Structures are given as structure tokens and as C-alpha cells.
Amino acid sequence: MVTRYHPLLVGLHWITAVLVVAALALGALVMVRISNTDPMKLEALRSHMTGGALILVLMLIRLLVRTQTAHPAAATTGASALDRVAWVSHRLLYVLVLAQASSGIILALESGLLDVVLLHRHALPADFWAFPMRGVHYVISRMLIALIALHVSGALYHLLIRRDGLLGRMWFGGRVVALFGPRATSNRPSSKVKS
Image (cartoon, rainbow, N blue to C red; front, top):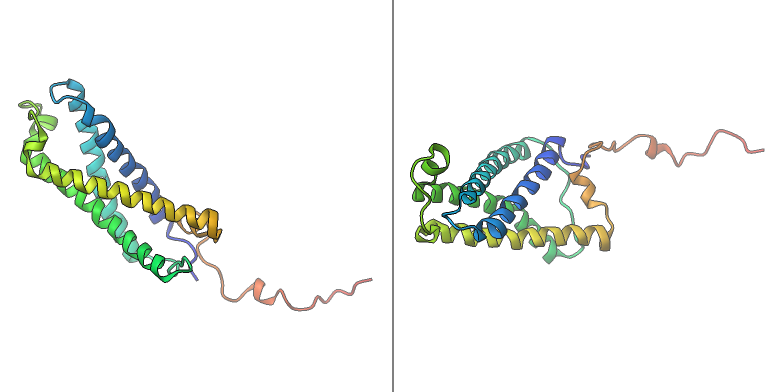
């Protein structure tokens, strides 16, 4: 029986999680405060775009690894409604991360950002909100923030309230527990005689 996710999937999960949070923080907390005429905006955009491209590649690899590897049985919260929320929210995380990366690519194409950031031609647009995809990118980012908060809340629920060791499934270590083995025979009486 598989008790943990594949080590590659575990690594991809944690690396992607850090990158997604960093990209969201850079976009929502840092870049929004920098004027498009400030040279720092270009550097922030370069980091944001590089991170977004890396997230997209890692998420696609993660999807491939997930479909090709065995994983633990579905977890339970003890309540069918919460189990359904968990099932939907996990899939929605994949959808939203891929949608966010895609909307970023479309926004970069719409605004000519690739020429500015990669080729150092032209200047940044005066206002990214002039492009339709900027609103989509914004809305998806806020949905992702809310979904990540839900995901962390669920993890804390399992860690602090249920105390069921669920988080261990997304960590490194042995993946397979034998159905029959030393534990199955541990109830046999000892052949040693007590004195």
C-alpha cells in the first residue's frame, strides 16, 4: 500500500508552492507599488515573468508525474462535505495556477512586454490595466490567494485538530507499507519462557 506521494511529486509540490507564493507576493505587494517609469519595475517584471514561466513548466511536469505514479488513497476529514471541498480545491489549484501562468503570457503578448523585458526595446506601457488580460490576471491571482489560504487551513486542520499525520503523505520517506510482514506476526506468543 502506498502511503506517500512519489519523491519527485513531493519535491515539485514544495518548490512550486514557494514559487507561487513568491510570484503572488511580488505581483500583489511589490510591483503594484512601483511606477512603470521606475527602472526597478522592469527588474521586478523580469523576476515575475521568469518565476511564472518556471511555475508553468513545473506544474506541467507535476501533472505528468502525478498521472504516472501511484499515490495514497483519498484522505478524509470525517465529513463528506469537507471531503468534497478538498477534492474540488486540489483540482482547482492546478487549474488556477495554469490559468494564471497562461493569462500572464497573454498579457505579456498584448502589452509588448516580451520586447521590453527580453530585447530591451521600447518602454513599458503607461498602464497595464489598459489591456483586457490584466483584469483576468488580477482576478485569478485573488482566487489563488483565497484557495491557498483554504489549502493551508485544511492542512492545519489535519495537523492540529485531527492529528492524523496527513501532511506526512506530502513529505519524503518510505512510500510503501507491506500488508503482511513483521507487524502481522507481532501478536504471536513469544517462544521465550519468562523466568
